[in-house]
Image (cartoon, rainbow, N blue to C red; front, side, top):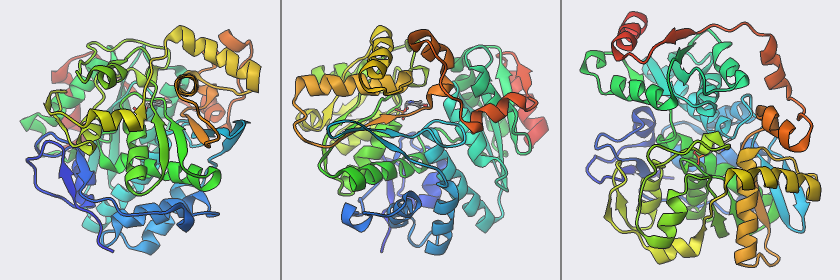
Length: 445
Ligand SMILES: *Cc1c(COP(=O)(O)O)cnc(C)c1O
């Protein structure tokens, strides 16, 4: 089995193998990596298998010759010692809950596998790495938890002090050991700008810095696994709905489809940041700057970086700024994808309605997904196709909103309630690059 090489969507970087793609994150020409070919996987090969085995079968098609099978098998068992419940709602319609990881969002699935693979590569080379990441909440906590205790890796997370919830903050500030967090007196955009500037700073070039955001192909491959898991249980061709922000999660479904999964329609609802559904209609792409602050806050993205990958899959080319240099096949895209916009009012109404009609408990992101799925059913009949809608976070991450709409607080899973008692430790910093640079040099040089 020959694993695929990876090319850059900007088209002027050399091909790399999975190890290089993972350690680099972004390609040197500022494009994003995609596999040159997609290995095949059929649901017949995974039917009846537990989740870690499905992950192993899928991922080994990309890691052959790079990670030996016995090692990968152990990494999958260790990363995916969690439930992936598929809840029946009505007829052949289901919700898949991707919230049983340690930080209670779907981002655990990718972060846990990527951390283990990077840890494995570092063990082989004896190198060390410092991972810098800016977060509005869920990415930082998933990355911090996933890399906690991984030898050779140090993680520094920057978060906006006023924009993250207490639970999100505690998920980053109570781990200690190789994990450090800085509360920035600013917005998410300020944290992001500090991190970007550090990556481009020649004075820091001797530090082995890397990023762990969703531009890394290592985040996307593990996200193809749960779509196969759903199809193995529910049947094909499947309608899949994915509430989307930076379009990393939906790209997992696109990768699964390229590997052979039969998807009847991929439904990708967004919140008020609706640049994608408008693009799908008009063929003209306009970013939203600055992004709108919506209830489903992990989806407040005005220019999804993974669009460059989606456009490439449809024969087009989009650069990192959002400029389309070659138009993708829009009619094929419209046949495969369905997208709609869900406002905050609709999000709240959907939380209410799903509970009243089906005793289906949704948080804001999952509600955007559910509402988008209902939009799809209204526009085109679902028929008797099986369908799965993703719930991307645990409702207990958003207790205030659920309480306001439904009048009760969701049960808190042990992973989150344990946090309340742990002591926090973090640094604080103004939005000041000079100070950030000094901090990095004194701690990590
Ligand atoms: C990150 C996130 C999303 C959006 O996922 P993308 O891959 O950025 O589209 C949706 N829901 C939750 C809870 C998230 O944390």
